[in-house]
Amino acid sequence: MSRLSYITMVVAGGIFLLAVLFAISLLPRGVREVAALTNVHGIPFSPTGDWTEVTQALAHTDVYLREPVAFKKLLLTFEYVPHDSRSLAVGVRENSFWLSYAPITFYEASDTTANEAPRTATVELPLTDKLQDVDHSIDVLFIANGQTEGSLKNELADTTKWHIRNLQARTVVETIPPRAALKDYLRSILTRERPL
Image 1 (cartoon, rainbow, N blue to C red):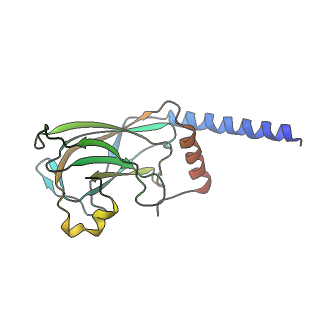
Image 2: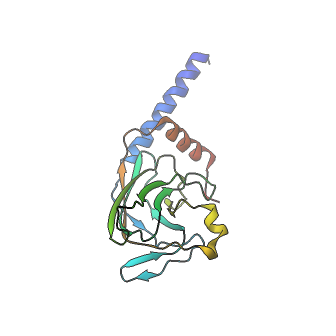
Image 3: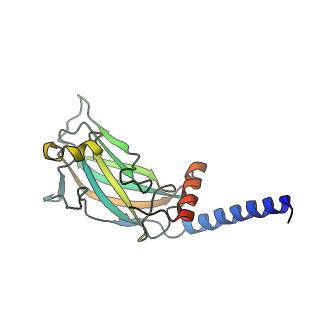
């Protein structure tokens, strides 16, 4: 086999694989099931009426997809009350390291905002390069005050308090994701990367 025919086969295979992944991404999309919000040890936060009171800097949930993450975005919509939080962010787990989240900030405190009033947020999270478990779930982490590992070291002194309710997740088709995201997705499929 000549070098040119080998390169042609590799390119054709890559294009075919991308076409298959794109076709898979067109599978049903819409509202997805969201698990209860827990701390990083898996203990659910206590409900206060129809609100969930988050009392630690890191709050975890699973979103159960019915399809692969390729060419998808996750839209999270929820109501929240920040109380004394300086910032609130949310991210989706990127790789097998348990704190591999690239958070997107949806709230930052300012002197002019009332922190006790309920607010609504919709956060768009690209999924193509995110880690998906064998049950098709993805890990979502809410992060208060920019804390990650530090909050685990100071759990007893953690004074985090904010409320959330009506957490809904929907998947939508992303236009063409960045090349690096596609590359990471293909690598995770080939190496069978799974959460630790």
